[in-house]
Length: 151
Image (cartoon, rainbow, N blue to C red; front, side, top):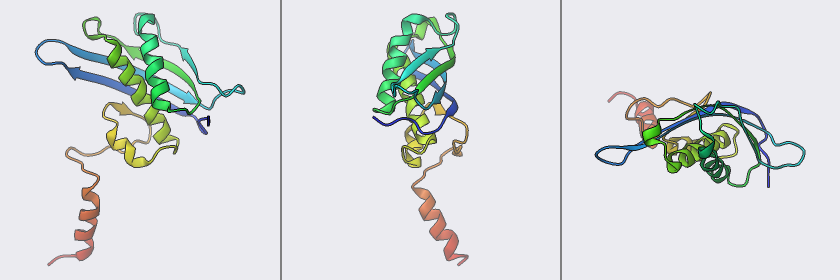
């Protein structure tokens, strides 16, 4: 198991999924990811007050983070969260945990930068902000057109 090489702070995920009709999933997490301690294990530290992130949702958050870290060890500090009781489902918090962890790996350089495009709900400092309609595959085409110059 490898460890996260550098700290990645302020990673967030806001999951909003509509199940159709009424209701859906909602989850909000903010976390700081740090290199693991001397034991090399992944640790989760919750600093969020109970009214912002109920304790019964923490197992789903932990499962999502472990899934997203994909064997990379880190100390994860949950610094903020949000809950909307009607839409607080485990799947939303598992998804938010996985997205924050994958985002931390991208920000730390352990995953390819292109993977950021697949992270629908995650944000982190330094993440390139795509403009509406951004399609990374079109950048190569745009560059070819730009180099060709005016016709």
